[in-house]
Length: 247
Image 1 (cartoon, rainbow, N blue to C red):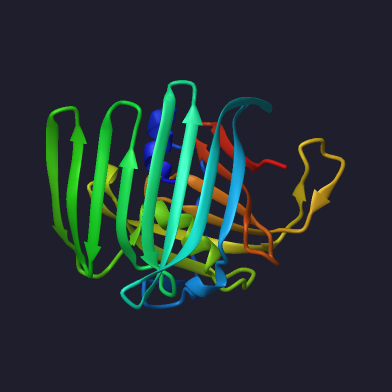
Image 2: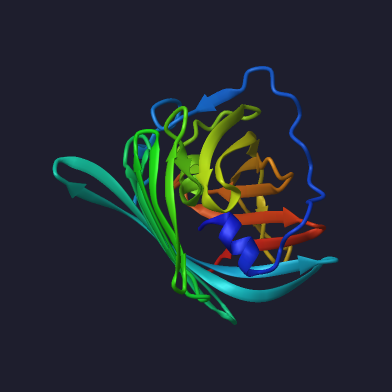
């Protein structure tokens, strides 16, 4: 799922009151050719309940269905991610392809209920495509200093990390809504049980946090054996958006 578009769709804008990452001493630089192993990610299909938490109260606001599968195209091993984010005003339908080993982005397509279509293609450090709303089309043609991850695949980057507690990391991603490249910093918190909603039970999990340049915080809980995401929390403006895996 793509965080910027999702937060805009739900009206979660503004400055976050989020925890800042401590200054790392050995920050691991992640690139589409270094420090991530996309082959750790196995094909999956999962559904999540989307909730807004405010002053300790949770309110359902939608659902997310996401999947990841392997494809073979012209001898290349490709990963295809699809996400459908459904909420009362409509649905965002996203898809993106990446190199299965490096998570280097190939293409990204997004269709939103306001009639907006975003089409991006990646070739090395070159990003091309268009953003169209109604009859108005804006071209995308950007060359960056190095190949970037696509923001739609940020969760895949997290799943492809080496699970080393306390490890700080950073990576650059392309975000159309923010004008291009954005640096994300993060840390692998380590093993931390994920409590069930009833608070009576918990399940084993690893926690990874990322910190955006806009002060937003994303906390990921992942199953250490399957590397599937169990829960994701986005923090902005004193509110929290939660994606909790449905049973």
